[in-house]
Amino acid sequence: MGRTLTGIAAAAITTVLAVVVAGQVADSPSDGAAQAHSSDDTGRAGAESPASRSGDRDGKDGATDQDRAAPPTYDQLMARTFPIDPKMKGSGRFETVPGADKAPGKGRKYRYRVDIEKELGLDGSLFAQAVQRTLNDRRSWAGDGEMTFERVSSGPADFVITLASPGTTGAWCAKSGLDTTVDNVSCDSASTERVMINAFRWAQGSPTFGQQAMHAYRQMLINHEVGHRLGHGHESCRTPGKLAPVMQQQTKSLDIDGIKCLPNSWVHPDA
Image (cartoon, rainbow, N blue to C red; front, top):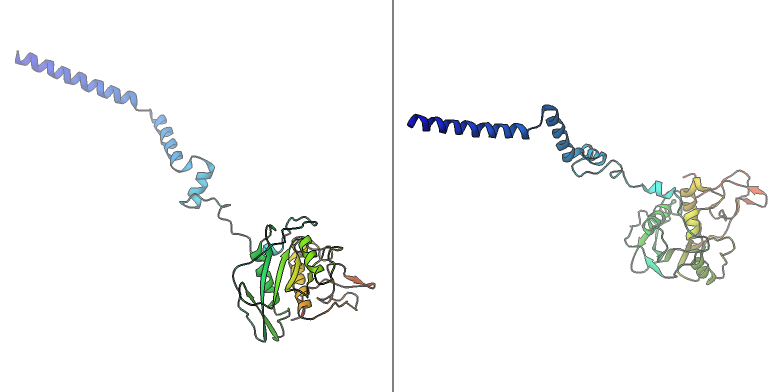
């Protein structure tokens, strides 16, 4: 009897083990299926899509090469044109570009503020950076060491360089008896505190320089209008083929009285 029970128990255990093993075999994939399952797991972990595979190559944050592309430099931005309506009339309300830039040179210090018309859609910080860099360039008004320029955003200022829509520019220039609407140009509104830079010209340039020289045109625009604020009047080139004086109205023409000259951004172009 004891042997019979022992035999039955052994048989039962054997049966259970067989069922368990069979179940495991049934649930387990073949070698090929196992490899495919492993590949799927790898895909979910880091190669589920081309984007996530790129993320594995680029870093744990999943950023792609395009995401990591460096932002455009100052020179690249200054070489671009920006869309704007040549007949735009903005709000007429201004805001000061925050921040300040110390005067880097010696001589008389001119303190200026940079304002931009609200809702203009242009980069005020780029404009402010361009003004400071241009005015303090060795080829500009500060180049001979007699003066230097400092940007402020509060407190007293000798003048305010203002980037504004064509319509608002025209209204402020008219305060000083100037009509900028005919050629859509900029001005120094001398009876006010504002040196007005026409946003259309800032964004689109002029045919005299062409879109390939937007950076140079913007430097000329700043130097020319600030030159008026410093007391300089208009000049004209007198020798064909030479660089035009920075105080020539280069936005309008490089050919004055039949004398055709080359575009020029600087007070001291040979410095």
